[in-house]
Image 1 (cartoon, rainbow, N blue to C red):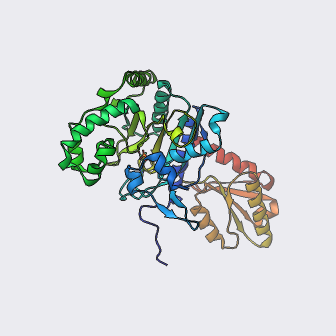
Image 2 (tube, helix red, strand yellow):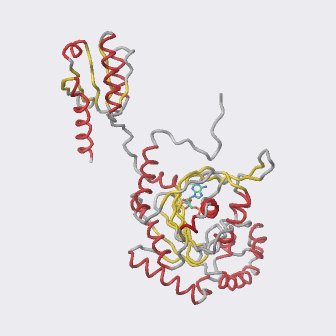
Image 3 (cartoon, rainbow, N blue to C red):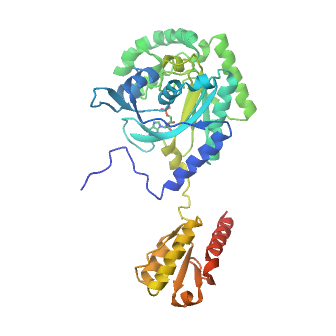
Length: 422
Ligand code: AMP
């Protein structure tokens, strides 16, 4: 059979899984420090959710969604991002009426029909955090700081955080008018999408990757000059809290980000070593989105990390399992004793494997392949004296212990070894 995986969708092979686990464990540890709890949503949602939650005229919705009609005629889409789904779940289950402040994280696969390249895939994974019910600048700064803390805890190097404010509906209208006036003079340089979006959604032009659009946007007015007094104050306070937190940042007035729902603060974190796809995380405030999706008038802020990009930057992690291979050298009675030891080890929480039907040589070869540091050998001699030989597979040194003490001995050896490798 030569059926292969779909382009842009990868298998995560056992050798890479330790890196994924490290990322997931670090997320739980770091986000837990800030009181975030985990929520998991389905990968499929009604298409309408994303049209409302991300915006009709974004690249994600216009070009990148995997949308299909199911057997009952409903239009469904694989989630291209997590925020809309998380908010749907929060609203559907009344989580904000139970507690008006919610801090939620989630992890899982997202799907976008993009052109695959290093760091950009069609199925990719995101770590996502949403903080609902707090509108003040402290919650912006603390959320940004949490994202930065995660990147640092993952050991990523050359981190840079860029911050911007997109203002509120009122000041953004003023800015849009000024931007439209500017862009109308650049119309011949804009791509077909931007020429169309210019009238309805001119901010998208600032996010377009087409070179001529980028050039056209170079002299465009900047949103910071249009912020109303409240948005200006909010932005200043966010920056001042970021300083108190000791988070290094740079202002980037053209950081509009690809989704329509952002208000006020937006940000992005980049890391060295990824080439052109160097954004590892991005997010921002979305004070109208919960309401737009049919929930209470609750402000929110969130971000998403791209896990594959983080994985690309991680050093190899030790994939070896801690455990003991059980080897039987002799007749049926020896095998029975070996199988008994196998069960005893597992009952004691010690990983163990065996291939007792193979020759002694083949069993020792499997022991070496297992990645376990030790094997426990029971031969005719050991059986008669109720002993077990425990062999260090790296150094070949071995000790004999009474069968009844084998379990504890192996546990201690594994523990000592773990202590040494720290
Ligand atoms: P976004 O949801 O577009 O704001 O993206 C947030 C983060 O997800 C980005 O900074 C990337 O790290 C990651 N990301 C977005 N799209 C892709 C993709 N197609 N493949 C891999 N990672 C992605």
